[in-house]
Length: 306
Image 1: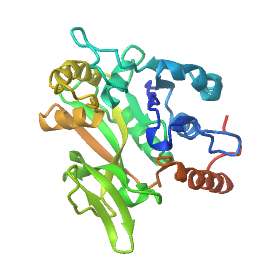
Image 2: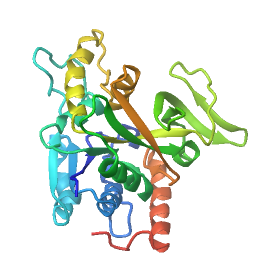
Image 3: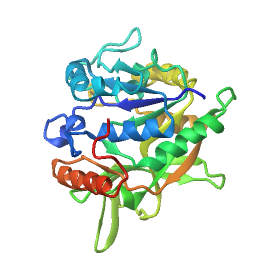
Image 4: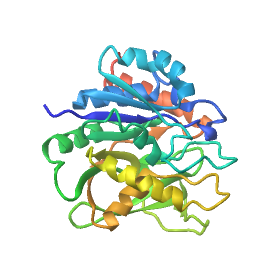
Protein backbone atom coordinates (compact mmCIF):
# COMPACT_ATOMS: atom_id res chain seq x y z
CA UNK A 1 0.00 0.00 0.00
CA UNK A 2 1.24 3.47 -0.92
CA UNK A 3 2.54 5.45 2.06
CA UNK A 4 0.66 8.66 2.95
CA UNK A 5 1.09 11.14 5.81
CA UNK A 6 -1.32 13.36 7.70
CA UNK A 7 0.33 16.74 8.45
CA UNK A 8 -1.38 18.72 11.22
CA UNK A 9 -0.62 22.44 11.50
CA UNK A 10 -0.73 23.09 15.24
CA UNK A 11 1.66 25.98 15.77
CA UNK A 12 -1.01 28.71 16.08
CA UNK A 13 -1.48 30.46 19.41
CA UNK A 14 -5.27 30.75 19.18
CA UNK A 15 -5.38 34.53 19.57
CA UNK A 16 -9.10 34.77 18.76
CA UNK A 17 -9.74 32.24 21.50
CA UNK A 18 -8.76 34.63 24.27
CA UNK A 19 -5.08 33.75 24.39
CA UNK A 20 -5.53 30.06 25.26
CA UNK A 21 -4.16 27.19 23.21
CA UNK A 22 -7.41 26.32 21.45
CA UNK A 23 -5.92 23.25 19.73
CA UNK A 24 -5.52 21.56 23.13
CA UNK A 25 -9.01 22.26 24.52
CA UNK A 26 -10.86 19.01 25.45
CA UNK A 27 -14.12 18.51 23.53
CA UNK A 28 -14.78 14.74 23.65
CA UNK A 29 -16.41 12.61 26.37
CA UNK A 30 -13.02 11.34 27.60
CA UNK A 31 -11.09 14.59 27.23
CA UNK A 32 -10.36 14.10 23.51
CA UNK A 33 -9.35 17.19 21.56
CA UNK A 34 -10.42 17.98 17.97
CA UNK A 35 -7.13 16.58 16.63
CA UNK A 36 -8.00 13.16 18.10
CA UNK A 37 -11.01 12.93 15.79
CA UNK A 38 -9.04 14.05 12.72
CA UNK A 39 -6.33 11.47 13.46
CA UNK A 40 -8.92 8.74 14.05
CA UNK A 41 -10.60 9.53 10.71
CA UNK A 42 -7.26 9.73 8.87
CA UNK A 43 -6.05 6.36 10.19
CA UNK A 44 -9.43 4.81 9.37
CA UNK A 45 -9.12 6.20 5.81
CA UNK A 46 -5.69 4.57 5.43
CA UNK A 47 -3.08 7.24 6.25
CA UNK A 48 0.10 5.66 7.63
CA UNK A 49 1.91 8.41 9.56
CA UNK A 50 1.05 11.49 11.63
CA UNK A 51 3.20 14.64 11.54
CA UNK A 52 2.56 17.42 14.05
CA UNK A 53 3.84 20.90 13.15
CA UNK A 54 4.16 22.78 16.42
CA UNK A 55 6.16 25.48 18.16
CA UNK A 56 8.99 24.25 20.35
CA UNK A 57 7.33 25.74 23.45
CA UNK A 58 4.20 23.61 22.81
CA UNK A 59 6.10 20.33 22.56
CA UNK A 60 5.75 19.18 26.18
CA UNK A 61 2.03 20.00 26.40
CA UNK A 62 1.20 18.50 23.03
CA UNK A 63 3.03 15.25 23.74
CA UNK A 64 1.31 14.88 27.11
CA UNK A 65 -2.16 15.72 25.81
CA UNK A 66 -2.11 13.78 22.52
CA UNK A 67 1.25 12.83 21.02
CA UNK A 68 2.22 10.08 23.46
CA UNK A 69 -1.19 8.42 23.01
CA UNK A 70 -1.08 8.53 19.22
CA UNK A 71 2.44 7.06 19.17
CA UNK A 72 0.89 3.82 20.47
CA UNK A 73 -1.30 3.42 17.38
CA UNK A 74 0.70 5.05 14.54
CA UNK A 75 4.17 6.38 13.65
CA UNK A 76 4.44 10.02 14.79
CA UNK A 77 6.91 12.76 13.79
CA UNK A 78 7.28 16.34 15.04
CA UNK A 79 8.36 19.41 13.11
CA UNK A 80 8.88 22.84 14.65
CA UNK A 81 7.72 26.09 13.09
CA UNK A 82 9.84 28.90 14.43
CA UNK A 83 9.84 32.57 13.52
CA UNK A 84 13.60 32.60 12.93
CA UNK A 85 13.67 29.51 10.66
CA UNK A 86 14.51 31.62 7.60
CA UNK A 87 16.55 31.14 4.41
CA UNK A 88 20.09 32.45 4.39
CA UNK A 89 20.30 36.23 4.18
CA UNK A 90 17.01 36.97 5.96
CA UNK A 91 16.38 38.01 9.56
CA UNK A 92 13.25 38.46 11.67
CA UNK A 93 12.05 42.08 11.47
CA UNK A 94 11.91 43.94 14.76
CA UNK A 95 8.45 43.73 16.31
CA UNK A 96 7.35 40.48 14.65
CA UNK A 97 5.56 38.21 17.14
CA UNK A 98 4.37 35.15 15.15
CA UNK A 99 5.79 32.65 12.63
CA UNK A 100 5.31 33.19 8.91
CA UNK A 101 2.05 31.39 8.11
CA UNK A 102 0.90 28.05 6.70
CA UNK A 103 3.43 27.92 3.85
CA UNK A 104 6.30 28.19 6.30
CA UNK A 105 4.53 25.67 8.57
CA UNK A 106 4.51 22.96 5.88
CA UNK A 107 8.07 23.87 4.90
CA UNK A 108 9.12 23.27 8.52
CA UNK A 109 8.18 19.59 8.04
CA UNK A 110 10.24 19.11 4.86
CA UNK A 111 12.73 16.77 6.56
CA UNK A 112 10.05 14.36 7.83
CA UNK A 113 7.72 14.27 4.80
CA UNK A 114 8.78 11.47 2.42
CA UNK A 115 5.46 10.67 0.74
CA UNK A 116 2.24 12.31 -0.52
CA UNK A 117 0.66 14.18 2.37
CA UNK A 118 -2.61 15.69 3.53
CA UNK A 119 -2.44 19.05 5.29
CA UNK A 120 -5.08 20.07 7.85
CA UNK A 121 -5.60 22.65 10.59
CA UNK A 122 -5.37 21.43 14.18
CA UNK A 123 -8.52 23.18 15.39
CA UNK A 124 -10.98 22.11 12.66
CA UNK A 125 -13.29 19.11 12.69
CA UNK A 126 -13.59 17.95 9.08
CA UNK A 127 -15.74 14.78 9.21
CA UNK A 128 -14.81 11.42 7.70
CA UNK A 129 -15.66 11.97 4.02
CA UNK A 130 -12.82 14.37 3.19
CA UNK A 131 -10.14 12.06 4.64
CA UNK A 132 -11.46 9.07 2.71
CA UNK A 133 -11.83 10.90 -0.62
CA UNK A 134 -8.41 12.52 -0.40
CA UNK A 135 -6.69 9.29 0.63
CA UNK A 136 -8.35 7.39 -2.21
CA UNK A 137 -7.30 10.08 -4.69
CA UNK A 138 -3.71 10.13 -3.42
CA UNK A 139 -3.38 6.34 -3.58
CA UNK A 140 -5.29 5.62 -6.81
CA UNK A 141 -5.06 8.74 -9.00
CA UNK A 142 -2.31 11.14 -7.95
CA UNK A 143 0.49 11.40 -10.52
CA UNK A 144 3.62 12.18 -8.51
CA UNK A 145 5.98 12.29 -11.49
CA UNK A 146 4.18 14.54 -13.96
CA UNK A 147 5.34 17.98 -15.12
CA UNK A 148 2.34 19.50 -13.34
CA UNK A 149 1.84 19.12 -9.56
CA UNK A 150 -1.17 16.83 -9.11
CA UNK A 151 -3.07 17.97 -5.99
CA UNK A 152 -6.52 17.62 -4.51
CA UNK A 153 -8.64 19.59 -2.06
CA UNK A 154 -11.69 18.85 0.04
CA UNK A 155 -14.44 21.15 -1.20
CA UNK A 156 -16.73 21.95 1.72
CA UNK A 157 -20.18 23.48 1.23
CA UNK A 158 -20.05 27.07 2.54
CA UNK A 159 -23.24 26.80 4.64
CA UNK A 160 -21.70 23.76 6.41
CA UNK A 161 -18.72 25.81 7.63
CA UNK A 162 -20.27 28.79 9.45
CA UNK A 163 -20.07 29.75 13.14
CA UNK A 164 -23.11 30.85 15.12
CA UNK A 165 -20.89 33.19 17.14
CA UNK A 166 -19.53 35.56 14.52
CA UNK A 167 -18.34 35.98 10.97
CA UNK A 168 -15.76 33.61 9.49
CA UNK A 169 -13.08 33.95 6.82
CA UNK A 170 -13.20 31.36 4.05
CA UNK A 171 -11.41 30.68 0.80
CA UNK A 172 -14.33 30.65 -1.64
CA UNK A 173 -13.50 28.27 -4.49
CA UNK A 174 -14.18 28.69 -8.19
CA UNK A 175 -14.34 25.22 -9.80
CA UNK A 176 -13.88 24.71 -13.56
CA UNK A 177 -15.80 22.35 -15.86
CA UNK A 178 -13.27 19.55 -15.18
CA UNK A 179 -13.88 19.64 -11.43
CA UNK A 180 -10.56 21.38 -10.80
CA UNK A 181 -9.86 24.49 -8.79
CA UNK A 182 -9.68 27.64 -10.93
CA UNK A 183 -9.04 30.05 -8.05
CA UNK A 184 -9.69 30.68 -4.36
CA UNK A 185 -10.94 34.08 -3.24
CA UNK A 186 -10.26 34.91 0.41
CA UNK A 187 -13.60 36.21 1.69
CA UNK A 188 -14.21 37.78 5.10
CA UNK A 189 -16.86 38.15 7.79
CA UNK A 190 -19.16 35.52 6.25
CA UNK A 191 -22.35 34.91 8.22
CA UNK A 192 -25.95 33.94 7.63
CA UNK A 193 -29.05 35.58 9.08
CA UNK A 194 -32.75 35.91 8.21
CA UNK A 195 -31.82 38.03 5.19
CA UNK A 196 -29.46 35.37 3.79
CA UNK A 197 -25.70 35.18 3.34
CA UNK A 198 -23.40 38.16 3.98
CA UNK A 199 -19.67 38.59 3.26
CA UNK A 200 -16.97 41.21 2.65
CA UNK A 201 -13.82 41.51 0.61
CA UNK A 202 -10.41 42.43 2.02
CA UNK A 203 -11.35 46.14 2.09
CA UNK A 204 -14.67 45.58 3.88
CA UNK A 205 -16.84 46.00 0.77
CA UNK A 206 -19.88 43.69 0.61
CA UNK A 207 -19.58 40.72 -1.79
CA UNK A 208 -22.08 38.08 -2.86
CA UNK A 209 -21.64 34.48 -1.75
CA UNK A 210 -23.97 31.50 -2.13
CA UNK A 211 -24.74 28.99 0.62
CA UNK A 212 -23.97 26.08 -1.72
CA UNK A 213 -20.57 27.29 -2.96
CA UNK A 214 -17.46 25.22 -2.36
CA UNK A 215 -14.92 26.59 0.11
CA UNK A 216 -11.41 25.56 1.05
CA UNK A 217 -10.82 24.67 4.70
CA UNK A 218 -7.04 24.19 4.28
CA UNK A 219 -7.51 20.46 3.60
CA UNK A 220 -5.12 19.76 0.71
CA UNK A 221 -3.67 16.50 -0.60
CA UNK A 222 -0.20 17.31 -1.96
CA UNK A 223 2.64 15.44 -3.67
CA UNK A 224 6.01 15.46 -1.93
CA UNK A 225 7.55 17.35 -4.87
CA UNK A 226 5.53 20.44 -4.00
CA UNK A 227 7.84 21.00 -1.02
CA UNK A 228 10.51 22.11 -3.53
CA UNK A 229 8.09 24.79 -4.78
CA UNK A 230 7.45 26.01 -1.22
CA UNK A 231 11.19 26.10 -0.56
CA UNK A 232 11.83 28.12 -3.71
CA UNK A 233 8.95 30.50 -3.04
CA UNK A 234 9.80 31.42 0.56
CA UNK A 235 12.84 33.64 -0.13
CA UNK A 236 10.92 35.25 -3.03
CA UNK A 237 8.08 36.04 -0.62
CA UNK A 238 10.44 37.40 2.06
CA UNK A 239 12.19 39.57 -0.50
CA UNK A 240 8.86 41.28 -1.28
CA UNK A 241 7.81 41.97 2.33
CA UNK A 242 7.58 45.73 2.81
CA UNK A 243 9.82 47.29 5.43
CA UNK A 244 7.96 47.61 8.73
CA UNK A 245 5.38 44.92 7.85
CA UNK A 246 5.53 42.57 10.87
CA UNK A 247 2.40 40.56 10.01
CA UNK A 248 3.02 39.35 6.42
CA UNK A 249 2.33 35.62 6.05
CA UNK A 250 3.60 33.05 3.55
CA UNK A 251 0.33 31.22 2.95
CA UNK A 252 -0.06 27.69 1.56
CA UNK A 253 -3.28 28.48 -0.39
CA UNK A 254 -1.62 31.52 -2.00
CA UNK A 255 1.28 29.35 -3.21
CA UNK A 256 -1.11 26.72 -4.55
CA UNK A 257 -3.13 29.46 -6.27
CA UNK A 258 0.07 30.84 -7.83
CA UNK A 259 0.95 27.37 -9.15
CA UNK A 260 -2.54 27.02 -10.68
CA UNK A 261 -2.26 30.42 -12.39
CA UNK A 262 1.19 29.63 -13.82
CA UNK A 263 0.13 26.16 -15.02
CA UNK A 264 2.40 24.37 -12.54
CA UNK A 265 -0.44 22.64 -10.66
CA UNK A 266 -3.92 21.26 -11.04
CA UNK A 267 -6.10 20.75 -7.98
CA UNK A 268 -9.02 18.32 -8.13
CA UNK A 269 -11.88 19.49 -5.89
CA UNK A 270 -13.41 16.55 -4.01
CA UNK A 271 -16.77 17.56 -2.60
CA UNK A 272 -17.52 16.70 1.01
CA UNK A 273 -20.95 17.30 2.48
CA UNK A 274 -19.83 16.76 6.08
CA UNK A 275 -20.50 19.60 8.48
CA UNK A 276 -17.33 21.35 9.57
CA UNK A 277 -17.02 22.75 13.05
CA UNK A 278 -14.22 24.35 14.97
CA UNK A 279 -13.32 26.52 17.91
CA UNK A 280 -12.87 29.87 16.18
CA UNK A 281 -14.38 31.74 19.13
CA UNK A 282 -14.43 30.76 22.81
CA UNK A 283 -18.24 30.68 22.57
CA UNK A 284 -17.98 27.90 19.93
CA UNK A 285 -16.71 25.32 22.42
CA UNK A 286 -20.09 24.23 23.93
CA UNK A 287 -21.51 23.67 20.42
CA UNK A 288 -18.45 21.59 19.46
CA UNK A 289 -18.76 19.49 22.64
CA UNK A 290 -22.49 18.94 21.89
CA UNK A 291 -21.75 18.03 18.25
CA UNK A 292 -19.12 15.46 19.26
CA UNK A 293 -21.49 14.02 21.86
CA UNK A 294 -24.17 13.65 19.19
CA UNK A 295 -21.75 11.89 16.82
CA UNK A 296 -20.77 9.48 19.62
CA UNK A 297 -24.43 8.81 20.45
CA UNK A 298 -25.14 8.13 16.76
CA UNK A 299 -22.31 5.57 16.66
CA UNK A 300 -20.11 7.58 14.29
CA UNK A 301 -17.34 7.41 16.91
CA UNK A 302 -16.73 5.08 19.86
CA UNK A 303 -17.04 6.57 23.36
CA UNK A 304 -13.26 6.22 23.77
CA UNK A 305 -11.26 6.85 20.59
CA UNK A 306 -7.79 5.47 21.42
